[in-house]
Amino acid sequence: MLLCTKSASRIATLVIAGLFLLFAPAMAQGPAYLEDVDDLPLAPGLVEDPAARVAFDKPEGRIVQAAASGRTDAADVHAFYAQSLPALGWQPGADRTWVRDKELLRVRVEAKGETVIVRYTIAPNAP
Image 1 (cartoon, rainbow, N blue to C red):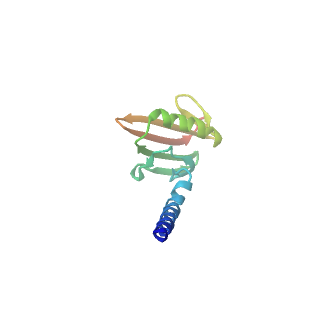
Image 2 (image 1 turned 180 degrees about the vertical axis):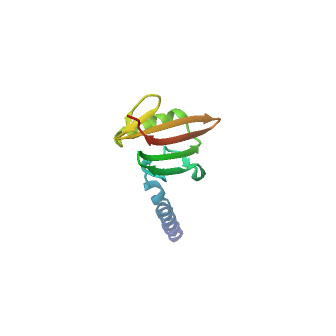
Image 3 (image 1 turned 90 degrees about the vertical axis):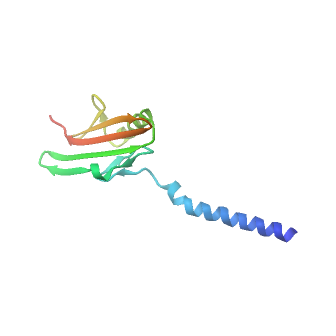
């Protein structure tokens, strides 16, 4: 009987270790970023919509449009960007806009039932 208990304990330890190794990379992974803006993170719970991506450069600066959605809270999304964007060099502007260097970032958050849709626009900041 003692042998069975030791074997069961070892098996349980191996199963737990295997599960940890399986899920550790996902737990250690940092935030996701927009595909066309490598330093603009997605708020937790959001997934970018690849069909909504538009990005190109022009002499006045780049123009990027993107959208993401997920089951999260609009207030949490606003709080995430209010905390994270200043650390990335974005300064708050008027009406949920952000300014960095010569660019203007607009983050529009819209709640539709339990889903939040976030639309991002980066454009040259007019002087």
